[in-house]
Amino acid sequence: QYPIIIGACSVAITSAALLAVVSCSVSARTFIAMGLDDALTVSFLVLSLSDLCYVASLLSSGVFSVLWAVEMISNYAVRFGVDPYGAYILTSNVGFLIYPMTMLTTTFLAVARCMCVARPLRFGDLFSTRRCATALAAFVVLTVASYVPVLSNLGVGEAFDPRVNLTRLLVWSSGDRQFVRDVVLGTRDTFLSITSQIIVTACVFVLSFYLRRAQSFRRSSSLAIQRDGTPSSSEAFDGRELRVVQQVTVISSVYVLCNFPKVLVNISGILEPDLKFTKRFQKVYQLIIIIMNLFQVLNCGINITIYYRYNTKFRRFFGGYSQYIIR
Image (cartoon, rainbow, N blue to C red):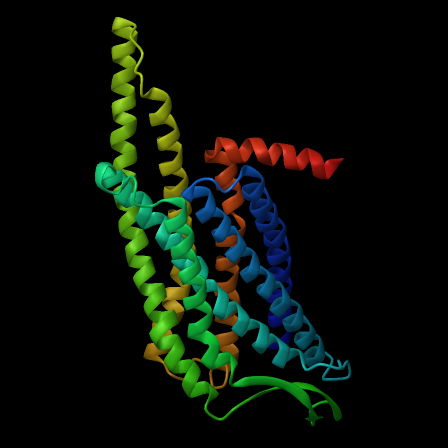
């Protein structure tokens, strides 16, 4: 039954990842069409590109996982020229490399907006487009460089596979690979996911407090306008700022919910060292990773609906881009 469960879960995650690839591609294309003339648009573009790269890696690992399930279900009567399980491990590691960029970008967005809301006069001009782009570029370098030690211990080569009784492409790993991976994931992935979860959760509470206060002020202002008929000169600006805060708050809230399984996986890995791909709980670990990936695909794919709901400019350019595609 295990191969059937793996196959069914893999089909589900592959389908979800395919939809997420489309939504992230459309989001990235729309932000480019909007013009990269402000820090918020640049940040959302980088988040969309990071999400796109991640769900593309999940799409690949999902396909290889399905092929691996097919081999197991057929008792290796069906065989492929590439070891599907090895390819699944390789593409999963690419996903492990990329997802911290999504975590860092979401945390950066939440912290930046939180600081601008809490202390607008002090931090309002701090997050310029150039500074934002520089910070995000540094995140990219940090994300890739921190996982290079793990990928450098993986490789692909032709070798005889006794399971299928033929020579095919197999993924190999050095003897130190698991130790290196444990160190990297412990210092990078576990620390980052837990820290990011705490920071973004705190930012959500602060932004939610601001939203409640701003909406209360707007209601009282509307009552005052109805009484004396004098409109507020800052009403349009407040409306735009309110939508920006709502957008970041919802994105951060979805991130907190969908990142929670990853936090649990990382904590479980600390409490139970055998919960790994190469240990005795390998099958359980793979099922847990698939479920975690489903939540992460949801986190990446659902953002387009948030952009469309709260970003008027995105909605306008999205409509034009959709008409262009239809034609």
